[in-house]
Structures are given as C-alpha cells and as structure tokens.
Length: 452
Image: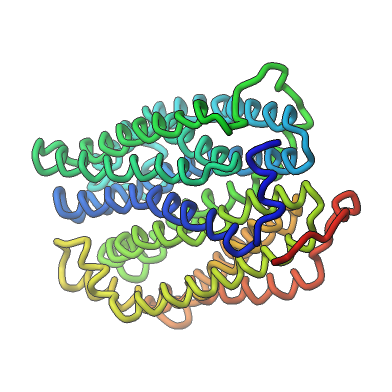
C-alpha cells in the first residue's frame, strides 16, 4: 500500500484542505523570496536597482518554468501510476524527471551566463540598470540547478503524500532568505550581490530540508535504475507544458508591460509597474497553489478511476479560487497605498501611479484563480490541449492584442485594465468550453467513488 491509497476513503473537503494549506503556504513563500529581494533592494540600494532586478525576474522565471514543466509533468504521471497501483513505474518516472531536469537546466544556465549582457538588454536593460541586472543574475544562475531541484523535489514530495514537509522546506528557504538579506544588505552592505547570495544560500538550505523525505518510513520516492523510456519522456514534456507556459509567459508578460509602460508613462511607469509586479508575482503563485493542491488528488483519483470524486474536486477548487479572488481584490482596493509603501523610497509621482493602478489591476484576481484551477485540473487528467489553450488565452492570445489596443484608444492608465479584462474573458470562455469538454477516457470510467 502506498502513502496515497488512504485518500480514496477520506471525505473530499478535509482531504483537499490538508493539501491546500501546505500548498498555499509553500507557493507563497517560494514567490515571497522574490518579493523580499525587491523590498530589500528598494530600501537598501534604491529604485534604479529595483528596476534592474525586476528586469532580471523574467530570466529567473525561466528556471522556475522548467522545474514546473518537468516537475508537474512527471508528478502527474507519478500520481496516476500510484492510482493505478504501478509503484515501480512511478519510481522510474520520478528518476527520469530528475535526470531530465538536470539535462535541460545545466546547459541552459551555461548559455545564459556566457551571453548575460546580450540577454539582459534584450529583456529591457539599459546602461543605467544593467550593472544591477548583472550583479543579481550572475549569482542566481550559478545556483540555478539548486533552485530548480528544490522546486521539482517539492512537487514530487507533495505527490508522495507529504505536503507538510514540502511546505517546511520552502518555509526554511523563506525565513533564511529574510535573515540573510538583512545581514548582506544592511550589515555588510553587499548591495544587489548580497540579495542574490541570500536567495541562493537559503535555497540550498531548503533543499537539504526536503532531502529528509528520503528517510521518511512511509516515503515511496527513491532513485531507481532502468528509468530511460522515450514514451515516458514525451508524456512528461507534454503533460507539463501548461505549467511551463504559465510561468514562462510571465517573462513575456513582464517584458510587454515594461515596454508599454515605458512608451506611455516613461521610466516612472516602469518603476511603478515593478512595485505592483512584485506583489503580483506572490499572489500569482498563491492562486497557482490552489491548482497545485488539486493536482496530486486529481491525478491519483484519475488513475484510480474515481470520476465522481474528480468532478467534486473540481467544484471545490473553483469555489476556493473565487473566494480567494474576492478577498484579494477587496483587500488591495481598500489598502493599495499600504501595500505599495512596502517598497519605500520612490518619488510621490511613482507611488501615485502604482497606488491608482493597483486598485484597478486587482479586479483581475476575481477571475485569475478560476483560470488556473481549470488549467491545472485538465492538465492533471491528461487533457493537455485544453489546459494549454486556457493558459495561452490569458498569457498570449488575448493579452497581446488587448495590451496593444487598450492604451492606444484609452490612454496609458488603461494599461492597468488589461489584466482584469483578459482574465475575465478567459474565465468566461473557459467555463463555456468546460461544459462541453469534460470527458474522461473510457479506461478511467471504472467507479464513481464517494463524493462526500
């Protein structure tokens, strides 16, 4: 019996909550590391350095997107295999995923390091901001494999029935990151380099905590031989694609926003967006955490053929996301200046642009969670085209034309309305499409299960 088999008999709401809270806390803390970097840079170095680090975030996001791509693709197959009672196949998938991640990340980091200056300018750096981009990224990239390994291992540990340890690893990373940031920036005055080292070293510590899972008596996870399988590799890449697109598209979105704000509002607009985007990066991962909590449960139930419980899990996920979205939007609209003030020493004009814009931007959180939950659900039951379609709608297909047209006809302030408009349209289309397309393959329609 695996550590996951007990979930078939547990009532769904408390079962979902037992995965939700560790997932939310873990994903929030993962993204808080970037927010903490922004806060310490803005207070300890200055607004120009903040803009520089914000330009570096898309490149940092590429590493996260790869770990999510391979991690979520592999973990979905892992849980489906456990649901089918195929533990040996599950372990081969885990080992293959780990090796595949290394084969992708190591060459990529090398290429990025060698071409750092060209890539930084391509992503929006200027002569003023490049020194800060360079300081931050040279350290982050050197430790890139640790960051991706921590994320991938955290995903698999959650799928192996130990969401609390996955959370503890990320809590360790986050707390240590805050302490080291303070030490390196305010005590030793290492500037942006110190911020990057704080992130890197805290990640290594978090990875060490996660490694304790291999000593847990109930753990299934271990590395095995004979894992090379071209069919499984293709499935990992295919299933994980929506997760990759979610994170990788963040890089595209940030670049497009930076260019558009620069065109309509100048450098002040770019800095104001940087402040909002640091908070948004945290919130995006929190909403993504709802889907991440669903994934192990949905994939396992899908593998076990419990389609009745699958439908109930989707409903629970949607209700949860709507609740979180409403609370988030209300809090931001009530306290935008208090949130933006976290970033300290900027001009009154920049603060004003950020505060006014964030209040409008926040409406998008009413719809964001719905889109991410649907995408995660379809991904978890191997409906990859649907999952990828949802992600592409909100990040490229709708986003790019709306971002171009809205400020052109309604002025620079309309840029802040792009996010709520695109997420709202995507949510509506997703709901309509889902009503026609939730079809489980015949091999998985075995038993409906208890939907309590």
